[in-house]
Image (cartoon, rainbow, N blue to C red; front, side, top):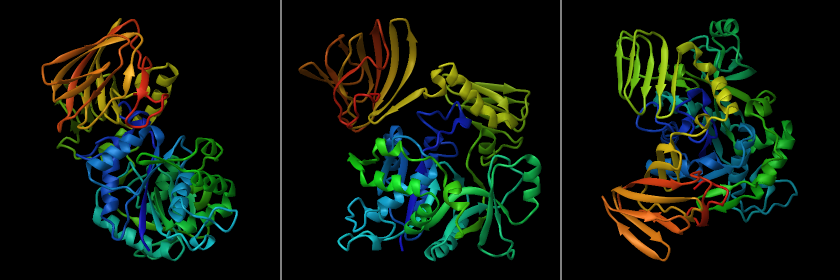
Length: 498
């Protein structure tokens, strides 16, 4: 029976602000090396024996980021299922399970959506499979141990059990949920689950780590698609019903499969833990001793990063003097830090975070306060990503704005027009094909073009290297919504940003 990795890619990662933001959350960031957390997850899944191409469940707004990062590492995907809004992990996995069992082509003999191949006619070629549910934002440093526990989990899943993987705790962590397992021998590769425990107080966490049958809840699961749907139907028939209908209404859009918003909106939100794992009698836990982290805070990132001789983790243009046990990260400019211990300092082009290492879990509250103030820094990233490339605002003032724009090879911006601004483009690197009205111009480095207000225009990169240009906007209004879109190469609707 094949293993299908199901990558859950819908997190927001607000505790890693200012680097992680709603428009570009932590799973897309390169926090521990040359690959993003999503790319690390895809590569890890690809190394497991007898796996198929993964399914990724992602937020609609992040679809081009998922596709681009998979293409960067040449990882084919079975499907990218797009959620118009997140409903937690129980529905997300149900979407994947129904999709795999139906392949969108089932003609069922029953009124209910299928939970196994037997429910449907013999014309379909879809078969039951084992789902390996992986969050997209975890760090796992010992891949050999990971492969071993997956093999144990596969044996159990093939027997119709529901497997979760428990991390052997290395300390009294209050940021994780816990799994209490039935006491078995010290070398047993798995145990029945007795209960799931919410994130505990420090006193409770200290009590749990003294006992050998308590594990951190990793959020990694393994089960047959049919088993999961059967248990979901037992305990949450309301979620089961809505998800079945939603998958039957999947719509293909370029490289993506869109779930119908009107049905997803009706789906109750719940996690796998609450919806299924706390109720089923089929739950088994496979212990997993590894240097693992869900990278839920700057302090947890520090724990899985390489330190210098004084315990500091440094990234970017950083100068330290008389500092110990700090995490210092510079994205845009020189950061000089002296005379502090146990601190987190993170710099981006539009925000700087300074806090004590132990208070990094409270950053979520600060982001909420920024949102209440209407600050764009709470949501938008300094670098704004689009399917054709990205741009960064260098300076913005009354009646003018300067941007640095990068267009990928083959990238094409929308055909568009502006009511309130004119634009001047200066080519810095590469070649630009510019459509202005009914004319076309091929521009090279050090050449420029002026786009008057109200003129229809388009920019594309026909070359084999990234196109870089400086855009100078002038006018009475410079908002991103001053765009009339005539045609879009990527199928975006008029409500989406360009």
